[in-house]
Image 1: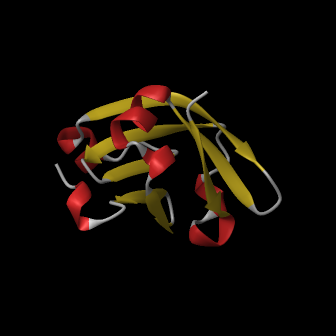
Image 2: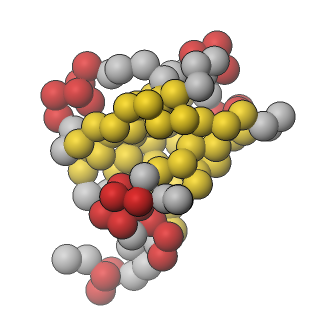
Image 3: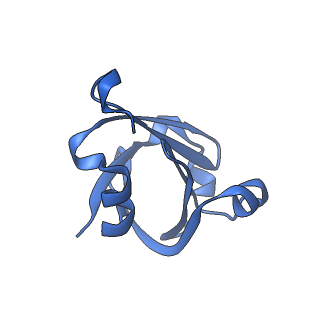
Length: 103
């Protein structure tokens, strides 16, 4: 099932988010990028990219289902995270529970 991430509509420009699928980029150990369009700089520097990830739309948000592989890599289900967005992309920053959690 993966992990569901909520992207509040005020964080992004909805005109870019009309497609039902998004790209998900594993950018580094702490950052996941999500966009309905391919982003060239993420294409070249990302650890991994997934496409055809379906999103669901509610009245106030978009719901993105991160795959099991991405969810497990980031251990997002047991860590805090922040969601920030701008126009046609969202960045999810995974935060360690405490400074001793770093590898």
